[in-house]
Length: 322
Ligand SMILES: Nc1ncnc2c1ncn2[C@@H]1O[C@H](COP(=O)(O)OP(=O)(O)OP(=O)(O)O)[C@@H](O)[C@H]1O
Ligand SMILES: [Mg+2]
Image (cartoon, rainbow, N blue to C red; front, side, top):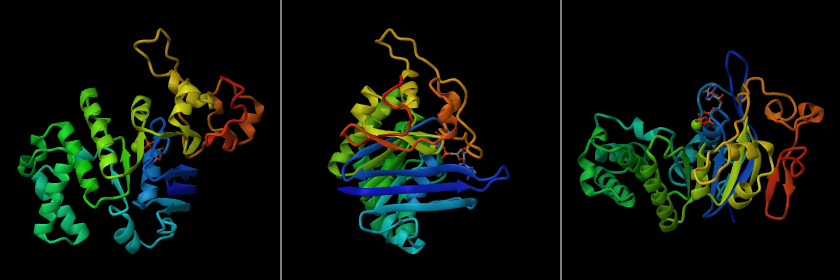
């Protein structure tokens, strides 16, 4: 059953260069217990998509519309802030922000940090909040003494566990993870990924897992959405996306990862991702696509169904090229 259904979501920012179309007509759905990875290059709008779902928006919003149906709550886009706070944020949908582990308050002990956040946002009593803080650390496999430590006394992996624990204190159904392991070494990354897998099973969570790392996406995801310049260009099962990518961008993204065991030259995508204040006409990938022709530069390709496995691709020549 769908837990989250996003339709034609837009988030544009007002800037001196004109509106920046960070999220520009994004649609997807996420089932209960499922992990959907959102993959794409830096600046394609992944974090903006996360913020627009949990509705933590900056002041310079130029356009915010579409629909986000979550677990019988109704459309989050039009939901009032009070209901968002009391019914959705942290209780229904939690987020581990990009770089959150480096944003822990350096002068507060880990325990007070978690409990004060709980007291502030959830009106819990001090005792209740401390109890919850202990449970949060236990959830993520941290020893009890961590509660009395300052952030600088913890390793990167431990800090990342703390912020994941904080996201889970209200037992949300959906957790948005925005690059949760990007700042960590590969061993610690693997540890955190295993932790996320265990938590998902134990607490029956659904994840929206945001990453630019395809290898990590393949570890955790049931389905994968490839994002380019504010849009989803291909979405499907992890199997289909990794074994038979149909969009030229997905194909290139996969081929740009060097493989140790396979004797194959990685290929690089020429050019740079477009400026979202003035994205290219037609298919936004056409200036970098080796197969692009006249039609690609003028006609915008819409997501089309391929096969019978719920896969969608936005390319005029999907299945014919690559
Ligand atoms: N508050 C803002 N005002 C104006 N432009 C913004 C704002 N926040 C983000 N942007 C722009 O929106 C686009 C998408 O940014 P976003 O942070 O969502 O990308 P991302 O995919 O998360 O990138 P990364 O992988 O580097 O985290 C970028 O061009 C960025 O510069
Ligand atoms: Mg980001």
